Image (tube, rainbow, N blue to C red; front, side):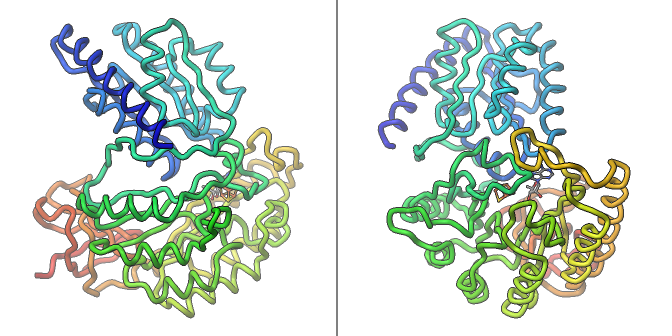
Length: 466
Ligand code: 5AD
Ligand code: SF4
């Protein structure tokens, strides 16, 4: 899709002149504010959007009172949508003061036709709407908006196109996400992602490797391979390849030091992958393995294709091969068919596996998914009480599991200043836990040996070891 990338680059050149002209007239740079909700995929897409905006001459600001505001939305749970509508209401006043302000919406929520209808009706101050499949077109859509009146709307149902080689404004110099596949084919019955991100498409290994080599040449030492279900990577390529084999190739990239990946579906996690992880020197000591529920009945209703026992067996297999691996998970509480007994199965798995941490969610009904038609077996209050019980259990366990390395000296990648206390640095262990320790900002982006002096639940306090 080189032709498409070139077309977009030409448009960017034209916009650069227009924005420079406008900026000269105003006697100040034009600013952009980029808001991103949701998962790592969206974060990655936002870096691409920001790359385009920077290229055409906008300067970043954190203030929403900007000349260009873009909101990359998430729709995985209902409250994500509500937050967007709330924000949109507030933006009206900025636009009143600055009528040339442009407001763009993109991301998963825009792939739902009801949402777009609602925005057309109730939020006419929005200028540009696009979806998850055409992020690369931002410059073209801005140009179209500048040349026309009314809302510019461009939503694609799906795509086979993967447009590469456009600018990206990376959040960190030393670590970066790399898409290895787009979309999802699993259709878990509660999940809207397959409807808004389309069918599974894998990038070719040579394109992925070329991107990683370029990133490493630019100073990146840690990459996160991104996909909704990385374990099924490569199955639909003309020359099929497994995710494990891709990891082996990525491992060979000289200068790259850490490899992470997100997300793994338990049903597709192969023995080959466990072997590769156990052997690897670069793959981090962490696996995020969403279980969603511990009840075989609920898992069946969720269309997850594994049982409680399958999940426990898989965890055993992983821990036998990689004994000190950190395991994290996602759990949904209050799926429609979940009864008290089913919830107890979830608690049972949590107690047996002893996760390092878990993201817990109350089930949120997503219109159009099969689960939206299922009847609830519990009341809202019962579900909330289950959620609190689960959270307590997870926190109790995490206190022990996360603290197991207290007193050890371990390597951290220094990521930045501590948000609360700027005299401290924040670094990340291979197992994904954070460590806060005194040190100079020059160390940001480097690997350091740190003694983990005090376990604090989900993080450590440490000190540099010279
Ligand atoms: N309700 C609640 N949680 C959900 N997730 C996905 N869809 C829903 C939903 N409808 C959670 C799953 C998934 C994580 C990213 O979000 O746990 O792993
Ligand atoms: Fe949603 Fe399931 Fe696909 Fe994850 S694997 S994105 S939960 S459908």
